[in-house]
Amino acid sequence: MIDDDLRPLDPEAVLPVVAGFFATYDMVAAPVVDESGSLLGAVTVDDVLDHMLPEDWREKEFHLDGEAAGRDEGYDVTEEAADGS
Image (cartoon, rainbow, N blue to C red; front, side):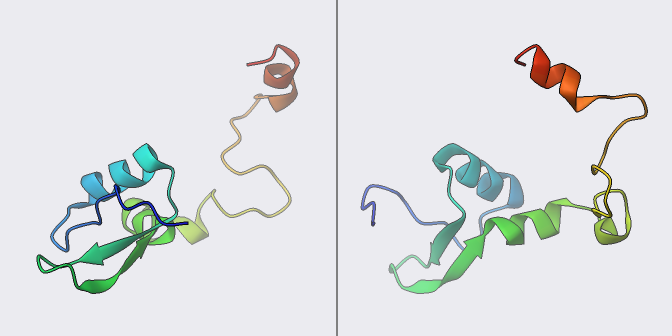
C-alpha cells in the first residue's frame, strides 16, 4: 500500500524529526529522497533505536534472560493488568 500524500524523509533530517515521523505515522520504515525525488535509501525504526539507545544497551538490563526487562524491584505487572491500566 502506498500513500502518495505522505512526504518522504529528507537526507538531512535530524533524529528527533525522524523519530517523530515514525511515531506520528506509526511506520516502521520510511524512504529517504533527495530534492529531485530520487530515492537515496530507507530508514527503519531499528535505525532510530540504534541511535537513541546507549551503545552498550545489549549488555544492560534490556537483555531478556528469563526475567522481565527493566522490572523495578517490587513492581508487579499483574497489579496493573488487574485494574485495567
